[in-house]
Amino acid sequence: MNAETNKKLKVSPPLGAGSLVIINYGAGNIQSIKFALKRLGVEAILSNDEAEIRQADKVIFPGVGEASSAMQKLKTSGLDQVIPTLKQPVLGICLGMQLLCNSSEEGNTKSLGIFDVEVKRFSNEVKVPQIGWNQISNLKSGLFEGISENQFMYLVHSYYAPLCKETIATSEYGIQYSSAIQKDNFYGVQFHPEKSSTAGAQILKNFLNL
Image (cartoon, rainbow, N blue to C red):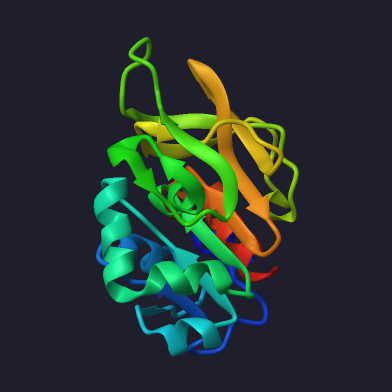
């Protein structure tokens, strides 16, 4: 990313220290998210402390790995009770988005229940996991300000959220599925904005500016 592009993506004014928390529960690729935010001029706090999370202006809920073990980590820390009650904008990324749903077929997992949708596994008719770049379409949220229809984003996943009333972006991989969802102050993206070049950085910027 060149200096001119980076300048365009800076959050103005920048969020203050402590305004953004990345939930650190041992199931997320948090360093790459933190570095992506730093390129936007934002220093994020990594935390699993309830008070610190509740006081944040924005919260990012990442996730990489297996759903049932990730939910167990949330339960062990009590965060399974905290996250659904948050009032500030929350962005779930990848597994974090899936855990915001009712349940997942992965490990027959009961999840946080914010989105009324059941996460399913891709069929064996496609290569699983889906790894690489895919397009997002039917964009319906301010989260995608400045993002073109059919923009490519980077994804790594074997499970997906079906289309539902909260769908704000779709992708296709054998079937159409929700690549982003939104309900009230909760947002979820299946793709990795922190790995999706300039367009991903724009989505992070849009979230910070909500």
